[in-house]
Image 1 (cartoon, rainbow, N blue to C red):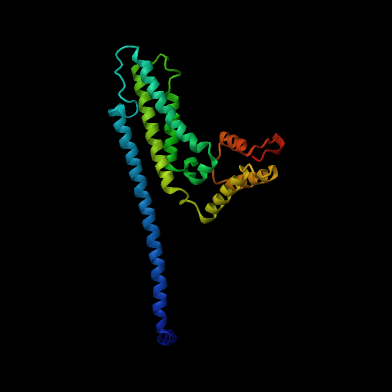
Image 2: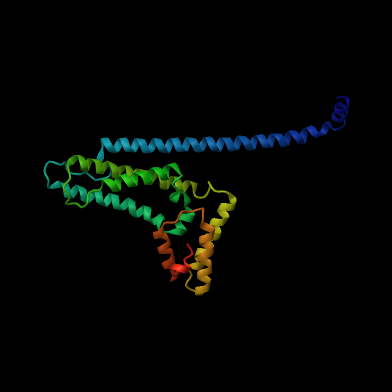
Length: 243
């Protein structure tokens, strides 16, 4: 104990740098905790917006189908369904802009990540809307079925808006530095793979390397791969398929 006090007396000046180091570590921990807390609050607010929009859609169905005519006879049915089909298809088209464009998915990776709560909510709403959709505008449906479909389309539209907003806010912030570097490399390689001035061998090599960089980071649909391969202008045989 005496040796400790003797050491402390001789090296008392170490107290100040050690305190600064400890203070910096505590400050970093506080910053990380604050960020996690803010993220949780944002998620709670987003979920609250989705819930409020869903409730509003049920009480005021005009949100999606602009001023639908009240169903008093069979003739207005096709008119209402046409409007709902158009709203439904518009959301699906917006989703396909991400689903089929690999470069866009690289910029906004959470749009393909079903583990993200808002993306998962959107994908669920899509299934519900697709299932509730009548076969055609002339299909025999009841007023209750039209109401159910209208609500599903509204939920689908709202869920997509929230998922897209969150994806554009997050971009790649939820990934590690190594993962962001892999995405940046993949994007550069895809630029070479779709460059008409590059040789077939260069495009082929860049394409395969890009797919390797994306593996495990972004889930690509079969349709997205087909679109990408057409851009690259590859004619891959089944035995040489990079998938």
